[in-house]
Image (cartoon, rainbow, N blue to C red; front, top):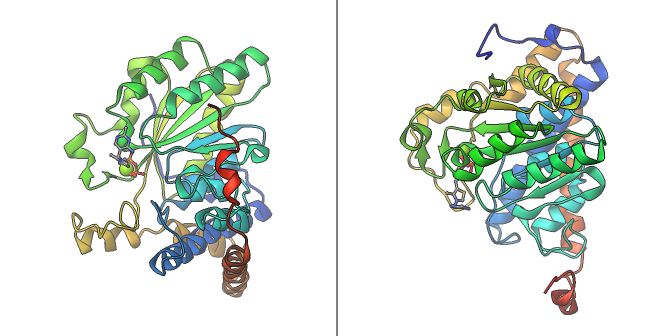
Amino acid sequence: MAAKEKITGINDVDIPADKLRQMYYDMLMIRRLEEKSAQMYQQGKISGFCHLYVGQEAVAVGAVAALSDDDYVMTSYRDHGLALARGMTPNVLMAELYGKATGCSKGKGGSMHLFDVEKNFIGGYGIVGGHLPLAIGYGFASKYRKDNRVTACFFGDGSVAQGAFHESLNMAALWELPVVFICENNMYGMGTHVKRALAHDNIYDQAQAYDMPGYQLIGNNIFDVYLKVKQAGDLARKTGTPTLIEARTYRFRGHSMSDPATYRTKEEVDEQKGKDCLTVLKDALIKEKICKEDEFKEMDSEIKKIVADSVEFSEKSPEPPLDALYEDVFV
Ligand SMILES: Cc1ncc(C[n+]2csc(CCOP(=O)(O)OP(=O)(O)O)c2C)c(N)n1
Ligand SMILES: [Mg+2]
């Protein structure tokens, strides 16, 4: 059982400079697209539920960088970040938020149900803990087919006290399924602090009960995320041993667009913003002379333009036709 050890740095990972630069770009893309989504939501262009990923970007990008393109990735309703990290284009994502026919789910899924089969991004689920048993199904399929794929299943701290979490971990360990469980512990399930929800809040410790490795990592440190997910993915692929990873992270905004987040103090939020994952990676890239300050500015203007274009694309895209109501319905 490995708990927190020394702080992982840029020199502890074997990631080439180009890839590190790309990882920063991907994180900034998530940040800017989420900020724009909030703006468009406030203007009434996006409706329904909308849960932003701002603050947690290093978890999605670091984990995806450590996985293979063939691996399956799934998460909860807080799914914009992972969908982008997995390669969904900003146009297709924004159009889905807008409910337009050009969105990834043809405008019928919305924010919580992003899906991209080609990128092996398999959702986007609204029921807390509901997708963990699905990860077992994917893991079982991979084992049965011997396809060498790993399923990375992301979920929030709110899933941990549920039966589905325990049943899934038990089955994954018992049947030796190649699944990496990644709990994004952002310290709150809606307005409830983990300490008020969990009898034992070191979530990674739960791995002991199912005889699998468990790690706690610092979610704003992308190097730590990469290293642990790589280790867990390699182990799952080689031996079928699942791992439980707890990424300690923080969402800078409320639970959803309709949450003013009055249950947190300004001091607490400011302290977390002071440890922003984007700054951690940026500082390391500057220190190692991989990027100069100007390059960050260029990246930001390029990304802002792509995000603005995604809004234009969504505005111009058609609504799904009425007949689409009867398409893709099983019963
Ligand atoms: C089974 C179930 N119960 C309750 C809800 C309502 N609900 C939506 S999000 C949420 C909090 C989940 O928090 P967490 O798992 O920590 O994820 P986070 O939002 O922090 O990413 C709850 C209770 C739900 N969607 N599904
Ligand atoms: Mg949470």
